[in-house]
Image (cartoon, rainbow, N blue to C red):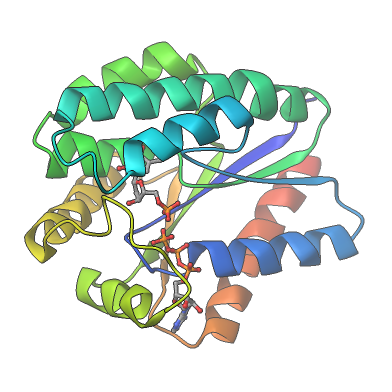
Length: 213
Ligand SMILES: Nc1ncnc2c1ncn2[C@@H]1O[C@H](COP(=O)(O)OP(=O)(O)OP(=O)(O)O)[C@@H](O)[C@H]1O
Ligand SMILES: Cc1cn([C@H]2C[C@H](O)[C@@H](COP(=O)(O)O)O2)c(=O)[nH]c1=O
């Protein structure tokens, strides 16, 4: 038996990080062994790659370089943190994973979803998430939330145009259509407590199914 791998996806400011923390706390309170992590990042090498990718002064970064850096960070994160946790039968909650690359680099940057999928399959091999929760919020709503957050430093991707973020949203819709069995959509415009409850229902039922297939 291996663990359970769940990724959280969505546009900027959708509420993924907020909800992930609350759901992880609740799982732990139920005695579950949970690993919370994020992409790009999660381990020192990948956090360093994150700094390079998201540095707002790196405006000349080529789209393929960007896609490869995300995939490289993902590979190291998977090998060093996610796979060991799954082998120890833990529940891994990951803030963004492969679908971010498909939507942002594949669709919004115009590299092609299939092309970006190919380099990512090289990186992740068979380790697709068991379940992915998509936080559905219009890009302008998510961006307004993060602009209001004075403590947040705006990174290179946050500073992209609204047109770019609209393409990201469209990219996610394409990815969802092709992965209906894996990706579950939640309304992320509801009040935070309601979004947390809806995500909890999905996650707890995945955990039960995993234990009692
Ligand atoms: N359902 C919600 N309604 C209104 N505001 C929310 C909701 N969920 C989160 N927020 C607020 O929106 C902001 C962004 O939330 P959060 O960091 O959780 O989003 P995120 O999806 O992780 O964003 P990003 O991927 O851009 O880092 C925070 O200020 C948070 O308090
Ligand atoms: C994993 C991944 C992420 N991105 C983008 C999405 C966001 O703009 C940033 C990460 O910032 P966050 O505050 O941690 O959400 O990176 C991407 O373009 N491609 C990816 O694979």
